[in-house]
Amino acid sequence: MKLAAGTLNRRATLLAPVAGQAANGAPVTTYTAVGTRRCELLALKPAAIEAGSQRAATADVQLLMRLDALTKTIAATWRIALDGVTYDVSGLMREPHDGSLIVYGHGHVA
Image: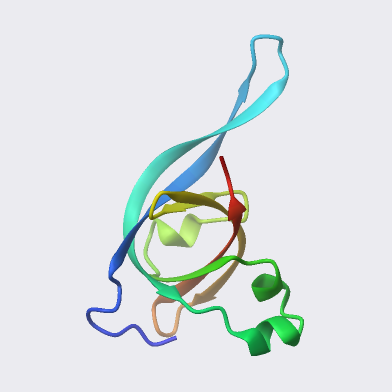
């Protein structure tokens, strides 16, 4: 997807998982902010959802970002915070030829 000047008009916080242990020894996962990136909130396309695109079908939000050293490390185990809402990453589409990344996010995480 082509990145146009001025379209990355929001700021998303990237949250990476950190494995740990609870006081009782049970494994727990917490999330720590590892950076922020400018992004564009893209409309979810009904045609992609109807066509059964797994990424789009499970997504509540679709974000366009620049592909860089940090965004290349985003995985489906990460979370993204945007406009006061935190989403689980449900899919990624990296486009190295044009330097873009689309992140699909699902569900509000409390």
